[in-house]
Image 1 (tube, helix red, strand yellow):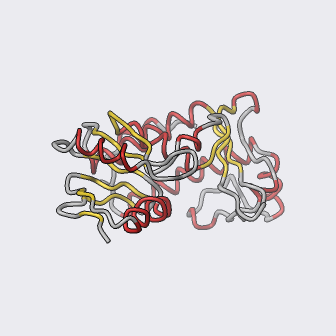
Image 2: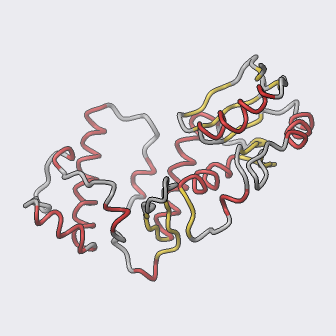
Length: 234
């Protein structure tokens, strides 16, 4: 499928009617693509008697239980073109979900992320603190959505440090030194919401410390926030 025309559209520029029409056309083509290239998906739609060649509102397309991505290897590209396998975190010994990515899709994901985030942060990169450990990036061919998020958002950082060590302990001295060296710059702080709270905010409060983040922009699982005149303290 070709997505280049979608990148010509400015993020958030379409009204609800135009956006709905774009989505209807997009999901119609996407559904046909997966139907024709994934035998398991074809079997599901056939069993549901879904008319994949008849364009209708995208809300009519059958939903798939997420468990299917734990039970089956679902992909619509030649196996030899898979360059990344994204996995869910997995809890209580359960199987992880697997999503398979080819090179073209990975590139489109990066383009889309850059276009959306730059509307908020601009195109100028900034020093970045990543609230995570480098351990999550060990296997680049098969890593979690957490690792993918780190790699994706890292493109917005110039100088980058990881705030946690291999044991998920806060590297406080490194963070304080980084903040001091970049005290006159805007700083980006990236992390998933639970990581920021569990390993950064709670730990700083536990140590009864105060860290000035007035020049920081927090990018987390729920979006981004300017931390103007704020600090973390107990």
